[in-house]
Length: 184
Image (cartoon, rainbow, N blue to C red; front, side, top):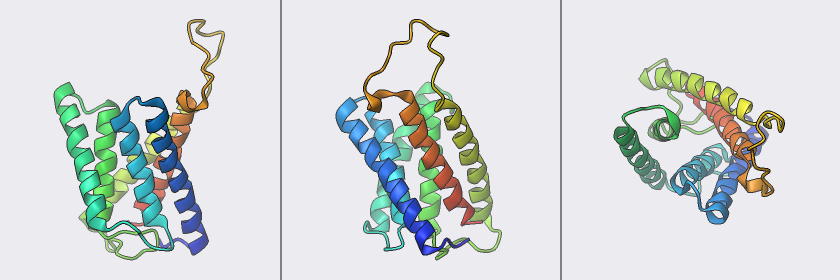
């Protein structure tokens, strides 16, 4: 599934914005730095893959970035003895990025898996995962009812709101699904 230039360009800009948002959150909030950096790498990596101008970062650099992320969060999964939660999600996300890099994938159809091979089957399964994750994030975008929990502190800084983080993850998951569908 090759995307037209303007669609690819628009998705590249959206992913670039999400990646930069996560970098700003790293600098300003200084919380969950590994998770925010992983999300930033995912957004920036997808922006590079969607870009109709080409990827300004060499593929081996992206491979090292995502392999380090998979190793970091994989170790967290092993320590926690559960694959659920954020660490498991980062392992899946990094693995999906590595799969696309190995397949030489771009949003323009160059290097896509083509015939239904192992990479296409994996891409289809990952598409389902990221579509499910997007739905989960959409639920997280809703504001909590103020009367439901009086102990909920009012958050004044926009970067700290869980709704902003959920919205950024929603965009990342949805664009990841689009990109992975291009491999099927």
